Length: 192
Image (tube, rainbow, N blue to C red; front, side, top):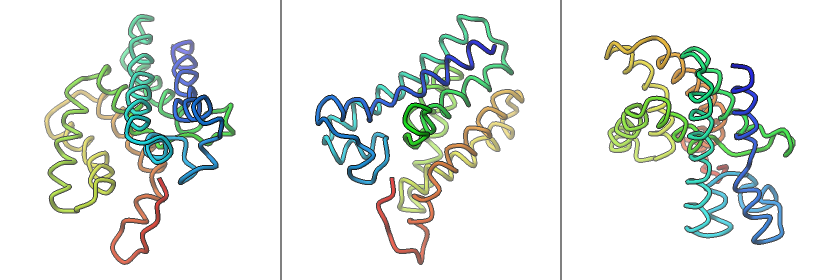
């Protein structure tokens, strides 16, 4: 389990936005746009194609980490550590001074392989909440917060509930500046 967890963190540390911008522009994405090494900022710097490439590659990191853990026959509780490690590696990559992305695409990719209905439920909750909140960021963060409760209500086993709850805490924390900027009564900033 330790090998899979360390490998997951190492995979997460492969900051696709940072390396793609470095190769294509010769610049550090953390000094451009919002300063974030994630997909949305890559979209600002490179356009829609850059956003799409980073989002897909970030999701593949999460997917690969879970596939590797399954291949190594990591037990279900160990998978929780693997999920957290790959997302933590993306958000806090050691080689970039712990300044990475926000973790959304990596989380979705990891969840898709871990338990494929979960990301579809997450997106479904987000779409319902978007109709009320009119903010993708707030709707997605609220969906992350509500997902573990939905899984509990549906009678899911404890492992996926704990995994989703732990991922929700990390992702919401990583996106806290975006959440605060979009709350009513706050001046809007472009923090992502």
